[in-house]
Amino acid sequence: MPIDYLTRLTARERTATANLHLGVLLAFVAGALNAGGFLAIGQYTSHMTGIVSAAADNLVVGNAGLAVAGGLSLFSFLAGAATTAWLVNYAKRGSNGNIFAVPLRIESALLLAFGLVGGTLRLHEVVSISLTAILLCFTMGLQNALITKISNAEIRTTHITGLITDIGIELGKLIYWNRSRDVSAYAVVANRSRLRMHSALALAFFVGGLMGALGFKHAGFSFTILLAVPLVAMSLAPALQSRGHE
Image (cartoon, rainbow, N blue to C red; front, side):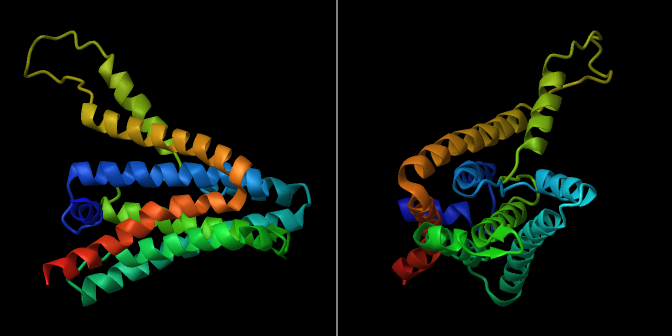
């Protein structure tokens, strides 16, 4: 049943398949928000490397306002990650049910809010950064911490620098020629399952970026409502499943 499948994606008991499917979905969402959000507000919001570097550059050349804006983006991402950590750890102590549903509900609610009032938020700024950018950075921090907690730090979805690095490492091992035929000797062997997983995540981020750019170009902020739909379904599935078993 679809509800059973959606529930397994965020269940406490993890499988490699559930981690992969959830990771691909969230990587798609992150790619769509990052690329589409850039078209909407002129700023990438899913990875902090560029934001921190830009803040340093702006500080050096005297653009204090832009440097502070970068700091606010970083703080928003941190706040999102901290929120997920607090919610998940609190749920672990007080419930035997699904401990990841609440952060998913918050993320889906933020995406819905972004889709409905993102255009209005863009007109309001803190220092020189749009409230829309702050909202997206918080959402991406929330999501990245969520998949990190769910997968025991095996998967990240809001940026692909680490994914591309790991793909390169596994490809390097894949083409390495083990000259010795002695099975007891050290052999270089690629982790093919890891290579497939990281390739799938990187591809999902890229495809999400394409769809996000097209969606924002033709539908504007309301495109994020579509992105929220699968997150809403996953967040509600555990409760619906429990109710169905009563």
